[in-house]
Length: 107
Image (cartoon, rainbow, N blue to C red; front, side, top):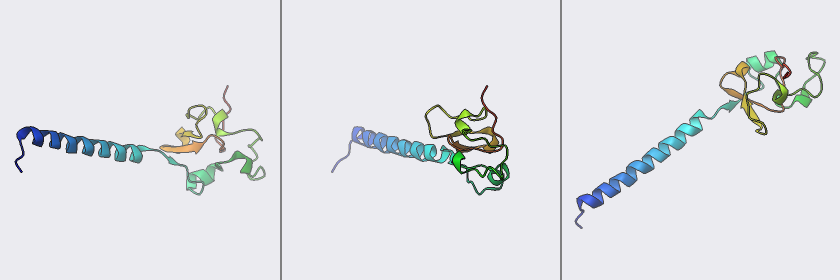
């Protein structure tokens, strides 16, 4: 079987483009923000819960029913998305239904 230069270049381009697509997929997956771990020291310190209805009002007297991350000034998630960034938990996403003691209602 004789391979021409044209066949070689076409094959090489296919292999390279497949490698680039794979690398981009891996990079995108690695860049996806992780969800805040409720058991992390910062989350425990701030009383963070993924579900605000599970906040212990006795332990967190600042909490008022109806408060949740999506209505907090600090929440940077897009409306309708279940998770979004919060500057308090740098590099991690919080639940739009979550709550922590840094809650500040939107104006």
